[in-house]
Length: 298
Image 1 (cartoon, rainbow, N blue to C red):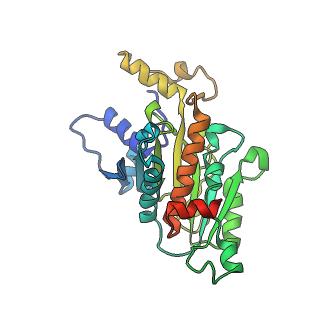
Image 2: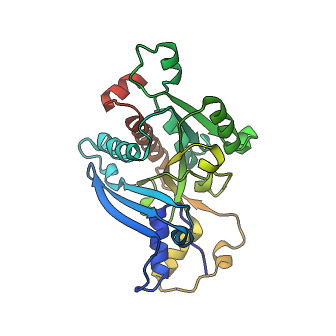
Image 3: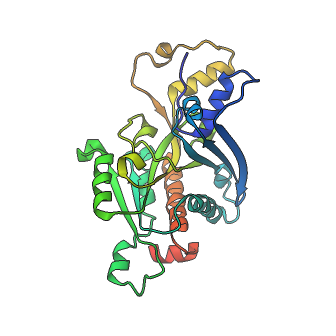
């Protein structure tokens, strides 16, 4: 059977439900739904080893914020999206301690540039607090690092981040990266927050060493935006909708490297969502309003 690909815990749960009998209960996984600033949120908690095996993801919490209505650009759409992402992320993070924000991905490849672009909108305060402690006493120390990719740096992201963590000694790491979705309607329309870390490059099919508590020695939280869909997964869903149930992975992929599909206007969507993520990280880390963030970034 063909294994459909997704980086979203919400979709992994959907895939398990589709493959299981209707009477089968998904043990070790809890899902709840809510809303924040008008945007739907689905929280999937993987509670134990059975849940890990069923969904193929490590134990922890995964929040998927549905930003589909963001593109309707109604009143305060940007501010509401920032508050939705920021509030949910803030609830995950430790209340105090310096933070290291890592923008993962290739800035030269549009679907993979979420991390570097979001990092551009994160307030860097660590050096300011050191230089002017009285003026910035109310700020949380934040450092930002754009890790680059192995092909352009010759260094694994995990290696460079691990070395930086040893020197900066943050209390937590927030990693931002692109992801792959299963459904086209979730591409550039959702944000996934997790407290389990991340595997750099997973969104573009180039899995590298993981960034998590085990590899870095501090809690690692991730913010991911799906910007691509695996073409074989998309084809499999379309074939199933047409009534073709038996799918062969070899025939779907034809022995080729994975082909990723993205949206026609991915440039604008990535720029807008990167700004939402960057501002959301600021909202989670600093006691600031969006207007104040605008002023400081300008």
